[in-house]
Amino acid sequence: MLDLNLIRVFVAVMEEGTLTAAAARLNLTQPSVTHSVNRLRRATGDELFARSGRGVVPTRAARQLYAEVATMPAAADAAVASLADFEPAHAAATFRIAVTDLGQLVFLPRLVPALAATAPGCSLDVVQLDTTTAADLLTAGVLDLAIASARPRGEVHALPLRRDRYVCIARRGRLGPGRPTAEDISRAARVVIRGSTGHTLIEDRMPPPAGGSVAVSSFSAIPALVAGTDLLAFVPEILLAEWFHAWDIEQWPLPYEDTDVTVHAYAAPRPPTSATAWFVPWAVDQLRDLGTTRHSTEGPNL
Image (tube, rainbow, N blue to C red; front, side, top):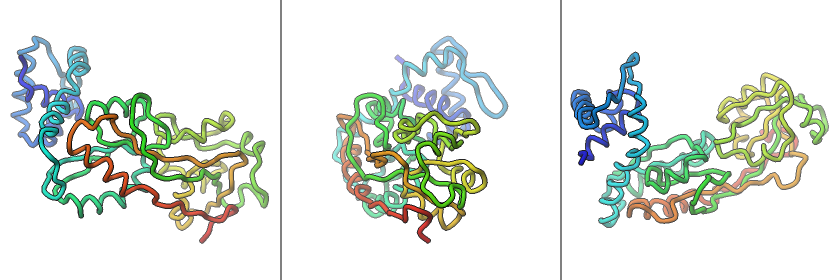
């Protein structure tokens, strides 16, 4: 039977891509990580990694092994943690949440100081949301919480957090004095958010992007793109208070019905640990009903 510690090191190397990063993640020395990888290589009889620049590249055997054992360290940690009651004031747990870049802007400023006050020994590990894998990671105990407006694929427990309205933004003067019509939007090139980010509910209702449109994987590039080009974009209104101060853009209501969305927190149907069982409802209480700032529907409210 393989030593679970060897599996833990192997998974860290696979996910971090370098021995140095894996050692830092596990609080080990790099020689210890190298020794563990060599022990696992001898146990399996297969080469697992090849050197590539400053990192390592997994072999076919390593990818096959990872598919089988990737969740074992988290499952073992969850099994041990679930045996003990969780006391946030004295705990030293790390909670992993998956959110988009937009979610980081909206939710982390509230969640981080609240966690520091309630559970000062605990940490947050924030990863980029991928709605195609989030449900499996929640069930496996790799994630404690995922936040998105689009439901992840798979069995999850959904907890509503807040509602927001999507609006159209453009550089000032781009659309003239009138509101954009559905025809205006269908003809105009726009910024499109890619599909696995959890922000596709509005995009799915739109006509296909016109020629000259730009696809991005995050919201951070949108204000500069819109302010400096003729591109349109459709974004949650909560973003605009900050963007209006920094960019010469204006907003318009979308010429479609039901442009509001509900953002949910998603969790495993059954909490894998007592720490997760505490964290999920606590985090939802901190983040629920943040409130939606409404701006003028024609131009920024400065």
